Structures are given as structure tokens and as C-alpha cells.
Image (cartoon, rainbow, N blue to C red; front, top):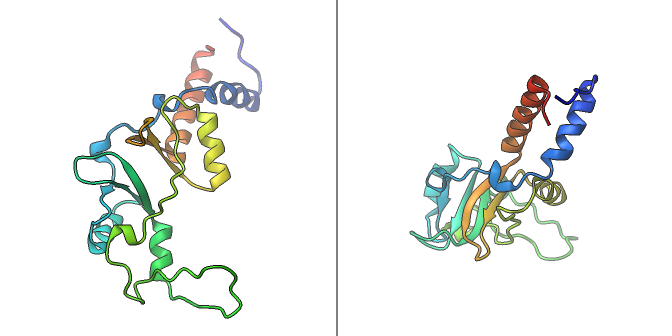
Amino acid sequence: MAQKPKRDHEDIQYVLKHFYKVPVETIMKKDIWNMPIAYPDTPIEDILSIMTARRHIWIVEKKGSTKLMGIITEKDLLDIMAPKKIKPYAIGGIDMRSFLFGNIIYAKDIMVRKIVSVEATDTIERALEKMKSFRIRRLPVVDNKGNLVGELTIKTIIIQFRKVLKWYRITGKE
């Protein structure tokens, strides 16, 4: 049996270095049927209803499809619900999407189309790098055709890392 390091932070470093190499598919949520999913033509009222219980909604091409088209998060709803203050010195385009302007009718009107994703074979390290780089807390896991096959959240990563660390400390095994 391998001898355990004597200090807690050494345990964490050792386990984390190995945890980084774990494939995303090992810890991702795979229950597509239980994920918040809507379609581009889903009315905004339905989106608001879903968001009362969830923090995000994956937008797929159409019913029966898993082709990922976008995501809606709580931040996206905040952006369209908050009053718009148009500054005369604004550089670039002004985001005119707002409930106040009456131009939000369907999910497609607010969904984010530029999706940062990972594949199931990517490592946890790669997923964490993307989360940090793009300042996001969740990633869709897609196949090579862009179909949603699962999701990975920072919460899931933390929970699984804690379990692995606890197991390592109890067993002392590598």
C-alpha cells in the first residue's frame, strides 16, 4: 500500500493532478431526459416558467432532436428584464433586446448562439480551462456532430472531486 502524504494540501495536489486527466464522460450528467431543454420557437412565457426551477435551458433544433443550437441562462434573462440605459457615447452595437421594446417573443430571441462546449472524451482539465477562460459555470457535452449528449457543471466537478479526495484519504490508494 502506498504511503499517504502527511499534509492535507499535498493530498489535494496529488488527487487534483490525477483528477485533471479524467475524461468528462466519467462525471458528466448523461440524463438528457432530465435536462432543461427547449426549442428556438418556444414562447418566452414557457422559457420563464422553466427558468423558475432551473438556472439554464439548452436550446435544441426541434422536438426529437438533440442538435444544440444555443443556451439561455439567468444572466440572459437579467439582460432583457433590466431597464435599458442607452448611453450616447456607446461604441459598437447596442443590444436592443428587451421586454420593454417588445422584441422578445421566442427562445431564439434571447438564446446565446455561440456555444462553448466539450466532448465526452475531453479531460476535466480541458473543461475547467474553458470554464475559466469563458467565465461560465456549465458546459454542454456534445458529440462530433454537435448533438447534446450531456452536461458538465462546476458543481458536478466540485462534488466529484470531493468524493475522489475523500476516497483517497480513506483508502490511501492511488
